[in-house]
Amino acid sequence: MKTITISAVSAALLLAAATAHAQGSPMNYQPSPYLGGDAMFWELDPDEGGSFDSTGLRLRGGVAFNDYFGLEGHLGTGGSDGPAELDYLAGVYAKGTLPIAPEFRLYGLAGFSEVDFDTDDESDFSYGAGAEFDVAPNLAVGADYMRYLDESNYTFDAASLGMTFRF
Image 1 (cartoon, rainbow, N blue to C red):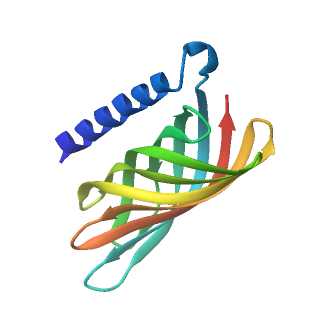
Image 2: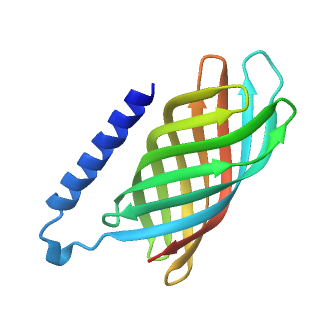
């Protein structure tokens, strides 16, 4: 499964480079890096009943290649509920953005994640959506909802609230 994840990340990076090149010459192309931190409210929902939920922290970083496309990575950890303890999550996603107003954006994420609980380690296709609002020229607040894992035995979702700083 890790080979699939590495292949998907490589393909996403190649797609990003091709998209950046297609945007035009380097004179009118200015990628915009960003870094964010979130409170992450996660839930592990086994199919056999009963769910586990807790709060953790998530670090996000990425590059917006233009107003509509970027790449984003997530690192998260923390929280436990009974036998379910989140050791870490890591993922890479393509990010599509829809600017609604100069200071407000909706976005969707699609990519691959690896999630490690104290009893299990899984990788899977992940997706989610969110919104972001600028409170200062380089600072935004936002919220999103991600489905990190959708396995045959359980799902792992997280809702997050946080801030993003654009360089």
